[in-house]
Amino acid sequence: MQSSKQIRDMQLKNRGGMLVFTIFLLFLFFAARTSWAQEKEEMDISKPTNLYTQYQNTLEYGFNDDNSLGKTIGYRGIFNLASADQNHLVGIEVPMLYNTQSGKFGVGDMRVRYFGIVYKDYSKLFGAFAPSIDLFIPTGSFDNGLGSSSWRISPGVAGGLIFSPSFQTFPILSYLLTTKPGTDKIPEDQKKTRHGLTLQSITVINFESWFLWLTPIYVIPDLGDSSIKNQFILEVRPSTRAINGKFQLAVFYRRNFEAKANTVRAIINLFL
Image (cartoon, rainbow, N blue to C red; front, side, top):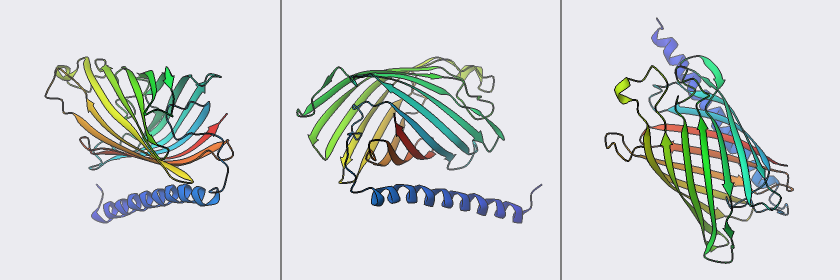
C-alpha cells in the first residue's frame, strides 16, 4: 500500500509532467509564429474545405478531471490523400496509445474518411458545400482503455459561410450510428445500437501570420434514449500557416464538458 508521501510525490510528478508538456506546446506554437512570420504563403490551409495531400504527426495526452479512466499518452498518425483537382480526399487515422491505468500500449480505434467538394466559391457568402463520411473501426481494446468496442459510421454535410477574409465558419451536420459494444465489461442492458446526431461549426479567425480554429460541437448520442446525456464539446486549434508550402505547426485542445475529459495535442503537419 502506498504511503501518503509516495502519493504526494506521484501527484507532483504528474503535475510536473503536465506543466512541461504544456510549456512545450506553447513554445512550439509561438516559436513557429515568430520565426516564420515573414514567409510567403503559397497555400490557404485555414479553410477546412481546401484539400491537400498531407501527413499529420501528432503527440497526444488525454485525461479526465478525476483520472477515473487513467491517462492516455501516445502518437496519432493521419494520412490524407487529395485528388489532383483538390475536390476529393480520402484519409486514414491510426492512434498508438498508452493507458496509465491499465499499463497497456497498443492501437486505438482507427478512422477512415472520405470528404468531397461539390461546390466552392469563396467570393460568395455561401462559399462551399461538401458531403463526407467517417468510419471508426474498433481496433482498440476497451478492456485496456484504448478503444470503444463499437463501430461508428458518420455521414455528414458541411457548408461554408464566408463573412470576410479574416472570419469564416463551416457548419457540419452529421448522422451518427454507433453499433452495440462488443465488450463484456459493459452490462448487457446498456449495450445496444444507437442512432444520434452531431452538430458542429469550425469557426476560422485569420491573423497575419497564423490562424485559429474554434469549434463548438453538440452531440446527441441517441435520439431515442433520453437517459443518455447529450454532450457539449469545445475544440481550440491555433496553427501556423503553411511554412514554405511544406509543413505546418499547431497545438490543439479539446474539452468534453459532460464527460469532463480533456485532450491536448502537438501537431506537425507535412504537405506532400
